[in-house]
Structures are given as structure tokens and as C-alpha cells.
Image (tube, rainbow, N blue to C red; front, top):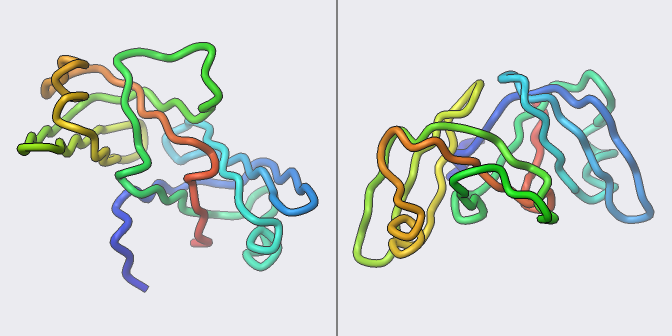
Length: 139
């Protein structure tokens, strides 16, 4: 299957915490970072997720936010440090490519946000992704 989602980071499941409807799945990415995905319990069971399972963490670029440093006092737990390697700015939106340990992510943000953050190629940034916006695929 080919997907339009370009943000695909490989990793290994370290924990699965099932609830009544949803499951919180902790993943150690191949680059060493940790990521949490909250998916339906049914999906976790159908994928056979357990510690040691190889997965790909997938996130649409429109669900990726950027900050110029780690953010405290925020409910978003997935915060991956990286470096901005490419920035295309259009009339309304900007497309930022960020290299993180073990891969590359793309963020679609507004032109105004890119300007307000003072982004430039080489900027140190932190990628922010809500755990409910991370999908998992088995490898």
C-alpha cells in the first residue's frame, strides 16, 4: 500500500496501555526518541501490538506543529527536537522539513507562523504532535 502520509518514522513498541475504547501505545523510535500514539483498542488488538512489535508511526503534515524550544505546561507530550532543513513559503502556507534523529518530518504551517517563529534553514526546532494524531502501522 502506498500512502500520501510522508511522515513515517520506524520504531518498536515498548508499552501498550489498554483502556475501555482506546489504547495508549508507547514507541521507541529508531532514532532513540519516545513517542506516544493513542489509537482505538480494536486497532491495537488487530495489529497485534505488544512490546517488541516493529511499527511505523505516521502523522499527516497538517497535524505537526513547530516550536523554537521545548514547551512546558502543554498537554502535547510528543516533542521531538530537530533541525529545519528546508522551508518553502507560499502566499498562505509554509512547508517545513525537519530532520530528527532517525528520520525526517514535514510540517504544514501558516506563512505567518513561520515568520513569527523566525524560521530559517538551520533553525533548531521542536516538533509537536498530539498523541491522538499518531497512527501506527505494522512493519
